[in-house]
Length: 180
Image (cartoon, rainbow, N blue to C red):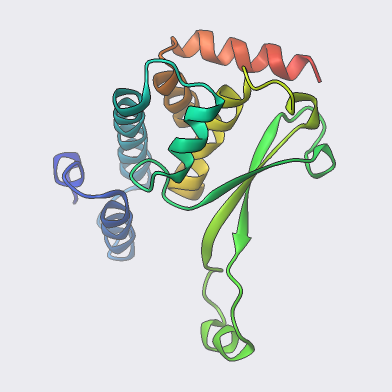
């Protein structure tokens, strides 16, 4: 079994590969993975705050999105309420990698590859640069950890980067969502 102390020394990509390899070998449990992801997300959030904080405004957020030590894949931001379910303030969408037909046949049966994400934000927040960091940071755990990320991980990540108490951050997100 992979110990968390073993994972903490790895880069995000190496950590993911180690988790994937261990999962294939059936040596770790789903709970082990969730715990490691949560711990790493919080650690990464602290590092982002140390590097870019204490004030994380929209311009700072855009710089963070370009930093591959902070965000695993390139991310663009789009404002399009039509792509969101009712009551959602934003979502992270995978932008599939464009590949040839030959490559697609070769990959048949394998998961789709990704080389970037788009975070789609509700149009009501387009001119609200003051709240965009809170809304977008919540979804960066999906970019960094995919399906392994939980809502709790997103709350811890966003609140830690912004220097807020987790409950205060959650309340802020709920208040913003209620404005839709």
